[in-house]
Length: 421
Ligand code: MN
Image (cartoon, rainbow, N blue to C red; front, side, top):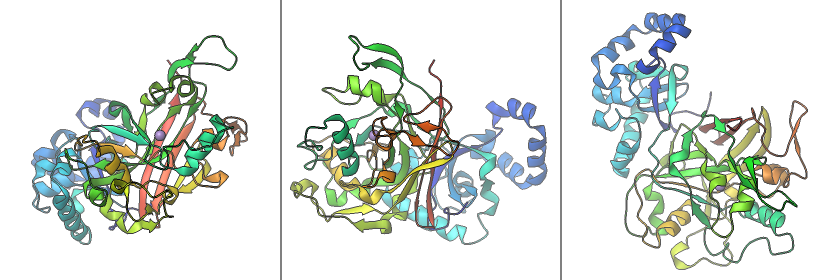
């Protein structure tokens, strides 16, 4: 797969397939694979025995290069990476993030030099021999609502006789606090949520599985620096470690009934999926493009030269691409979002996650949710197998993808819907 070249180097957390807690299942189900692995990679087996962080197949931090993953704990233990192995022999990126922006930059430069030569080879594992885990321990999770096309579409559907954007929208990045404990890694099955909904014309709410289960195509930003002061907008990106793709699964029927007056609650908190790979912000800084002037001009604490990330994004449902858009359509920037969410003095922690909100563009095929693509269910979309969808059915699989040109793929966020139960 292209897009994971030396200018990218995204971080993740992995463990080899067939690690101890899975060893018996692996031996039962795939003995030929286990013996082939032992035959083909004796040097890796001996390294594993020698190297404490690798023993037992414990989760550790890796970096992706092409179709392989470099084991950073092993590279550090062998002295090839001039860092403390304890930063990487862990089940999350948090310790490495907490080492701070200078360490992020230093490691990135070291890795770029290492991957240009053969020295890192023994620490490389094929991508299909590993299991990818949630890459960081999520602190607090905030979701914004920063696409003007998305907010306008939703306003038109739900308040057809009123101005689509509420009066606050152009003055601040609207957002809500989500549920950090239900952020899951790509590939995790998503169980259809149950809850209260108020069906049209009914006297009382009904309880049951959501019938309007949806996706939201988003980018998430991972905070790598703790702080207890408001973050100035022009320094905000210094605090951001990296970027993930994010699917904010949403039960529209639950949401419509519960959201007044405090906003999303159970309609969103059952699951949020993120990509297994965290793209370092440094890999994306030159993907910023100027954005249209904000009107009216924001208050001083949000004021900056308007910009957006030029990242191509797409949504696939059961093998059919149903939307293609770009992060350049976003109205509020990641820097403005972080400045806003700390302007009241709210502290940030390493591992905090904040997301853009659904990313839509001005055209019909650029909408980042089924709610918009099917226009509230009134205009179902056609899939390649001849079926149509307004919202997700059990068994449906959604994949979000993103990339910055040919060189950088943001990976994917994959999730399949399981029946309620
Ligand atoms: Mn959202």
